[in-house]
Image (cartoon, rainbow, N blue to C red; front, side):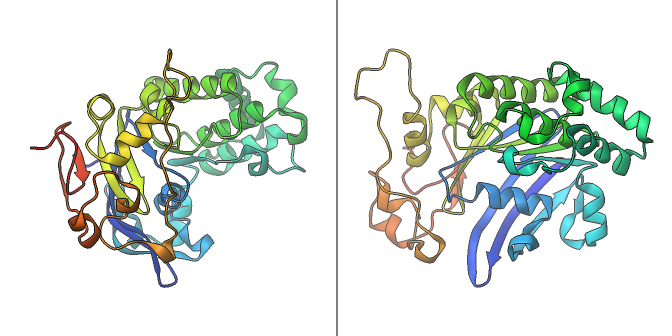
Length: 320
């Protein structure tokens, strides 16, 4: 049985620049896949590809395939893709501040999703909106539904965006850094809400984040991107216990731990290269303490890691 979302060796280009190179990911119902990496690693581009929204930024899939519930999205018409978006695939945007229409009341923005995709009349759509808002722990839902976006806090706006993503009863939710710019307490609440949605509704969740702590808390599997390539992928527990790729190990090393000595938290030297400056061979080699001449010359193949997942590294941690 195939996964609900199957991203199979996908390449994405904008103009002559290939920004994603051979990305393969799967996520199924009742599962949370965390997609992690620094800014510029290709996380949001992967989300746009999965949603069929690449043309909005001048991008296109130039290799591989993206399948949703066994259907190749590359062979669908735009009308067919639009029917999936909102109905079977819900999208939680990175910035709730700009995701809401400032001249529409909150309730109307949620109502329209269930009216369009579920065919509900005005009264039934509003009843569903209030039910969703209550499930998302929004107090005084009826009053908030009549409010304007500028009257809500950042955390409340994020819950409204999640309600909009849920209003069409989707099978898959793609959440692009849903806790960015929120304070720590609100971040924890949003993560709890997303986790409960997967447990209670059996939806699939592709959670895009740069926060490895969030991945450890909520995800079943994790995929680590670096400069448009997949560095490592597998179950969260084994990978956090024994990361095979030096980049994965470095990201985990950036997580603050209770009782850490002052000054012991380490960063990763350097930065993710831009698409016009991708290095030859392994793209992480300029920042990697284990790099050799082989890493500088040749692209590493994906191999099975000691943690039971896949890793693209010439010298993976824990290997003989």
